[in-house]
View (cartoon, helix red, strand yellow):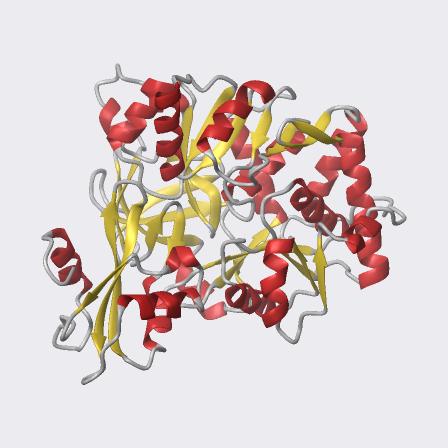
Length: 512
């Protein structure tokens, strides 16, 4: 199913239903939304030669034009490649080159940096705030969306890997359909009076939740700030009403703190779906206490987007069940289109309560990694996705996350892989060795800490390393703390023992 068909159906049935909002200001109803999309599709095909199967990247800050670009891409039958607007231009350029994108939609802030480092393969850069985009909206509309089969590629999402280079996750039309329908059955209901607020990056979970709201002819709201601002959200929500939003745990914590400080009860907010990192028990209990019965948790990853488990609002808010605390500390139960089990290293299912790797099988699981059959074969074995996350399942099916088998750091809801940061630091001429680990932090979940061994006889400062990182990778990935050491702890095989480094941090030892 092509999701552009959902837009067509909604626009035909409810043409005057309000669709796109910038803050509280209506930008387009569903009839206009569809007209813009069809015209963009016609222009992309006629002027830029975009056709079915081509990759088109979207490197944009949050805006209503983001949805226009996405649906125009699908209208043609092309593949959307969403790129986090917080990434460094060099990182975005690598993704564009790997995906072999024919065109990139940008906003002014992302386009300026990208133009300087754009890969040779990139043919077109299209600023949605510019004249050419406005002209495309005036082109002859494409009559109807291309037919897309369930196994055809729709969304190419790049997720960082332990190799230090992102991998392109191939999400099909069938994956998107299964995830969207699972939302209605396992996460939340959507009605025409509802609205989705895009405060988190639309390249990730927030954006991928647009489908359900298009299907139900609900409203799509981008705040004036184009991002997360707790005070703005609490003031906007009563004006819009019936708002649902996706938020990382750190966002939830800030929203709750602002609500408590201002005396707000979260009026106008219907549902907050939280995911993307560990939510501390005390934090979610306070959130329910301050804002009420509004919270739902999902657990997923790029390879199974938003679709592994869900903890519905009644479980988040329940304080009467004998096992309510354990359930609240879990990530919920398997969503309807998937099977979830806990396995040992050989793939054998473990008994209830035992910790092992979380495995998933079902219609939301990715088709594989883009042009990377080796990584695909390692991650999907005998029909099961090996998530790399460690957890346990109780007798009622509730899954609790434990230590990750990979070294991924989750800071403020964003995934950071240590090796990527390590490789950048090792490019500095005065760095001999480096190891990066995460340190628990209340506001961000985790922060990045780098243990650095300087080249003998050379000195290097925190400021120098910080500047070096900022020039190469996104700011949120750079270390927040540097520890300068004479050597790194290693085992007999020369492997760095990151467990010892984490112990040093836990004990408050080492260079400050």
